[in-house]
Amino acid sequence: MKVLITGDSFAADQQTKFPKNVGWPNMLAQEYTVTNLAQAGCGEYKIWQQLKSVQLNKFDHIVIAHTSPNRIYVKSHPVHAGDPLHANCDAIYSDIKEHSKTNKRLDPLVDFFENYFDEDHAKDIHNLICGDIDKLTKPFPVTHIISFDWKGLYKFDNMLNFYPTFKSNRGKVNHYTDKGNIEVYNKIKKQL
Image (cartoon, rainbow, N blue to C red; front, top):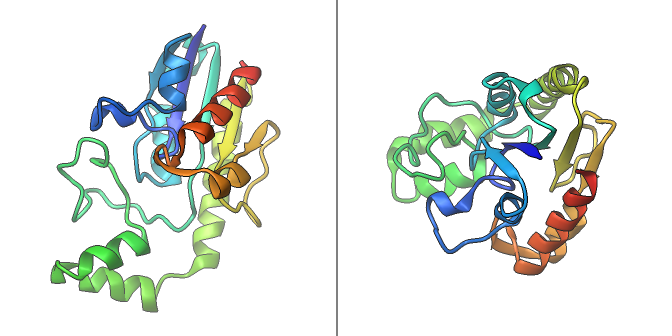
């Protein structure tokens, strides 16, 4: 079975940076032919682009790990551009704020997030992109996964909510503990 994985850090191949890390995507790759396009830190726009970059009909199943609407598209991340896991990362407030303590070049981005960022606008744009992702993938077997609070966001038909798993099993590999990764793996495997 050929499986396509797209999404953010909850689905990214952690082994690109940490060879010993085995997350749920790597577990799937041990049993199936997996193409993993997910990238740590990417926003929903880049997830949409991941899907548009391949011929979806070449896969038997698609798994999409959706992300927060609060990620702002950036062409090149001001902190993580050279990082193999976060090379295509988008900007999110917590990350920018943390790095601004040692990098004053980030102060204008902090100012943007604190004084100009409009969460309602971000949710609307996120929902529009999710709607297009839904149309794009509707003809194919697809599982949509979320790992954070999804209130007020687009409702997909075949959606697995791993937010409770994330809250109780936070870890370093795809943001889950070993137990959390196994739980995610088992639930996704049932969808295949």
